[in-house]
Amino acid sequence: MTSSSGASRRQVLAVAAAAATAPLLAGAPGRAAESKGNAPTTWDLTVLGTSDTHGNVYNWDYYQDAEYDDSKHNDVGVAKLATLVNQIRAERKGKATLVLDAGDTIQGTPLATYYAKQEPITVTGETHPMANAMNVLRYDAVTLGNHEFNYGLPLLAQWIDQLGFPALAANAINEQTGKPAFLPYVIKKVDLGGHGAPKLNVGILGLTNPGVAIWDKDNVAGKLIFADMVATAAKWVPIMRERGADVVIISAHGGDSGTSSYGPELPNENPVALIAEQVPGIDAILFGHAHNEVPEKFVTNTATGERVLTSEPSKWGQRLTRMDFTLTREKGRWKVVAKSATLLNTNTVVEDPAVLAAVRGQHTKTVDYVNQVVARSSMELSAAESRYKDTPILDFINHVQTEVVTKALAGTAYAGLPVLSIAAPFSRSAVFPAGDVRIRDVAGLYVYDNTLEAVVLTGAEVKAYLEYSAKYFVTLPVGAAVNPATISDPAVPDYNYDTLSGVDYDIDISKPVGQRITRLVLPGTDTPVAADAQFVVAVNNYRRSGGGNFPGIVKTQVYNEQQEIRQLLIDWAQAKGVIDPADFHVPNWKLVRAGVPVF
Image (cartoon, rainbow, N blue to C red; front, side):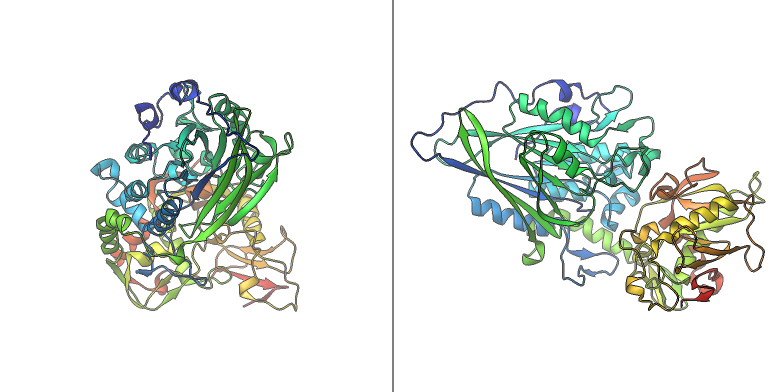
């Protein structure tokens, strides 16, 4: 591994003029003579790729307090990835092998949250567990994902400073200077192995997701702007080629579908296929963000006819992308003559002991923390049916949010307005067991690091919001069989289906999208919600800032004290001591067909 140096890389908002203007290789790239004879000599390069590790180091489920397992028996974690990487390095016996990551690294598990919230590295100076793990694995570069911005720029800067390799994001621009706020790219001079083998210059360009401008608006507004990923690639790929890159690989935190979860106000969220099609000079793209398994997909560039290799290695360290390139030299220049990719499953190997050792103390501290008892539950509360039934466990979230906002607005101009609350079924497996409820149980219900906000909506806006949310369900005519496993549209993730407390409503899933809210009344009455009625609506920061592209919700907050919802749930449970549905469960919505309840 070659460590990157220079303060400009390590300061999040530093002027990145050196990165933007100075060559990253000292001197002109060398050109070794081609081999003589009839058959051209070939060399090979292997690039290994990870993405969306989301704070997973150990193969551990902190919410279940057990080894991770799912229905497909996947494993997770950087320790598993490291074993595969080390096997391939050993297999290749020192030949050129690079290891890249396509982002979303420091958020996603209680381990990551602990060192951002409970004992933040910005306060303690401790090395982040994901830096400890990734430094042992010896990455060559990481791209910043959108979740890298969740905890603010100072923590991101400190994490980058702790890495022994570059962090890339060419399209994250310092709003004040117009220069890249992070290192846009690196060019690695690699030894291809073998006696007299020439050196190969591999350019690696990092692209982050423009959606950061919405999802972490409070952290980046006025500081960073996020340029279009396609246009950014078109800008930097020729520069990298001019500066000696023989092979160009993009590490992109964006899917390949060409669609976005937000509107047209920001550049495309998932443009990888468009980058491959429209930008000449790219050999391969490692990508992430969508959490999909894409072992090998070729996209033809419309300008050159060259096929660009792309691959996405699932999520959480479940898969490792392996890209293999065969190269030869023609007229003093390198040429890629073959390339392929595959995915390797981390459930085939044991965890790397060196990675485990590097993070063991932090892992143990996190396990101890999440196993603290916060309250007792009077009965088992499950989220298994929360997508299609009004369940007490989701009402628990809405009750706490309503209570916090109502108390905060007492004595203000908004004190007289009814308070509604929005919650989504983030987890299908969350359970509060009867008896002791631990921090991990609450964290398993509310898995995101969202903060609580509130805005004012009219009755018409509430109805439009609910209509948009109701697109989650497939259309099932009266009399058609109802299967809870297939009741939702697979194109709409669970976290983009919201339930609302504080009004009573029916969702008619036999009707077309946009005509499904057939009953919307004031609680406990038959009085329809007036279009011009006003409500305070408690909502998380992700949704309020535009995440999911819900209508009407992106407006000035009347409440925003930057309180994390998960912690508010924990605090409420600790203060109350008992979690009893009688204190908060108010059935107020149901699925119907022609007025008849589905369940």
